[in-house]
Amino acid sequence: MAISSVFPVAIPAGRTGIKPVLERISLSRGAKFTLFTLLLLTLIVLILSEITLRYAWTPPKKIYDYSHPYIPRKIGAGVAVAYQSDSVTGFSGEYKFQTGPLGYRTKSVLSREKEDGAYRIFFLGGSTTICSYLPLEHVFSQLVEDGLNQSGLGYEFQCANGGVDGGQTRDTLALLNQDVVLTNPDCVVVMHAINDLIAGLAREFDSAEVDRRAARSKAKRMYRDIYGAPRPYVYLFYKSLRQLHSDRFTLSHILKERHSRSEFPEQEVSSFPNVIYFEKFLRSIVGSCQACGTRVVLMTQPSLYRKDLSAEEKDRIWCSFHPKDGVNPTPESMVAGMAVYNDATRRIAAEMGAELIDLAPKVPRTLNYMYDDVHYTVEGNRRVADEVIGHFLESFSSDDPDPDTHIEDSTLPHLSAANRISY
Image (cartoon, rainbow, N blue to C red; front, side, top):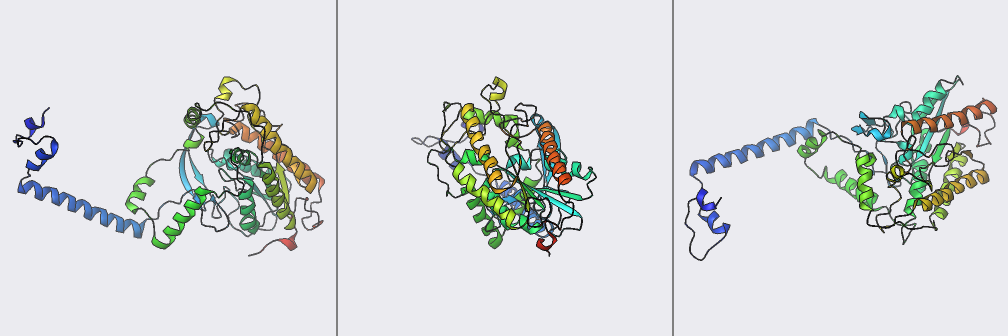
């Protein structure tokens, strides 16, 4: 439809386009007043809403906390975020991703003080530890707590999940020394491999490379602490009304990642340089626990990687792609890489006297137990929990039940009362 049929105006000769037409369009005095009034009322409503929200409403806490100067990133305290889980994980439906007042997924570790008779176990690692895509009751850390408390050992077992999505051994070392140790843990269970392995796939690998995401977020946090929220509360309130989805752990996300790497041919990777630093940080983790008299258990990491993956299983592989350099390792390369890192874990446990739960060969490499490269399904979490519970039951049956004896032996499952931190 021609503009002239809607706005019957004359266009000066030699002038074409929309601009000369708009110049000739004029609103009536009444229309201008109505439009100005509506804009003014809208502005007043927004200002009043902003003032009201700033005094009467607290924005929901974000999942990640970057405020600690020495911890690159951890899960925030008091987080309560509505999630929608994907059926590929073995659980389909809405749930709340929640953390306790100390920033851990737990039902029992709610303060740094520990009651007499309590036995605290902290699980540290990456996304395969925290399992944020599942409700807590389906995550192996909570299943371990429930199972041990039903075993009749006479302790009140308290398990806390301190995993962080994307976390590497260096991040766990910082979290352990700067936060976990202050909560009086009796035992620390550590599982790492895949994130350190992926970080080392970069063509120009640099172990000292700063986590840019953490650096940006720390800068935003500092700005917010000084100047307040960088965005209007009206916008934050509107955003808080939207149901969140754990998109990163859905089949659609996997397929999207698979599509993004389709232009990169698979490559054989035989060098895994980051394992040197992986070992250094893992040894430091074990040493820190032993120096505090805390029992430490290392776990090898299971994965779906096999040389004979089916077409469906191969379509679930996405974590190994290194987007920065377009490195797309073959499944055979990832099998070799995971073996290198898991062997390093076994070797460190043997050399330093740490306990070992060799999970890698005990969790079947099928989609029933892992819905993608390394993330456990509900059934996979049950299998991990069974192995961990079995290890603890065996160790408790063979160790002296008195928590104040043999304090010089850091491999025993008890923390000396003399070494406990009190607040």
